[in-house]
Length: 208
Image 1: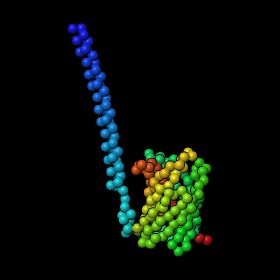
Image 2: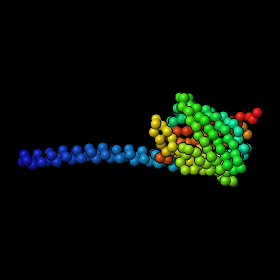
Image 3: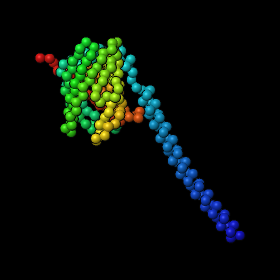
Image 4: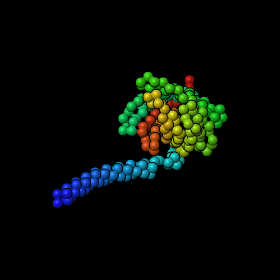
């Protein structure tokens, strides 16, 4: 009898442990599934709500890279983290020139923490609002499409953060406000998620 009671008691204890483990595991699985569903919904919403370059086909003034990026330009901008907090500020001096359908855009960045950076773009006008471009830290080629007053650039870049390089994707939009001003907005994307945003105002410097 005592042996039977001990066996029953042990069985009850094991059952309680298994039940508690199941309840805990079920709760964790439920939380994981809810989190995955929320993340999937956010990704689906982002993909469904993303703008198309075709949305700007009838807008004015018309953006032509060779006309705007010609001679000296100046820009100022900010970098926001994923929460929308401004984490860096910077200015850019630019020099642009074209030989027929081949353009060269030199950029000299100065950040508020003292860092300096140089980038040289080589851009080809393919006609019918299509562009391609290369630069030293760009992986492969950038591709661009212009419609109306807007241009959409897309490319992969090696981004240096704390002495480490990370490959990220840029979804880069330019909007021509007037003949002397462009608003440039970029999403920096990693693993399909926007991890930072860049906003830049580019102004032409009048020729002497």
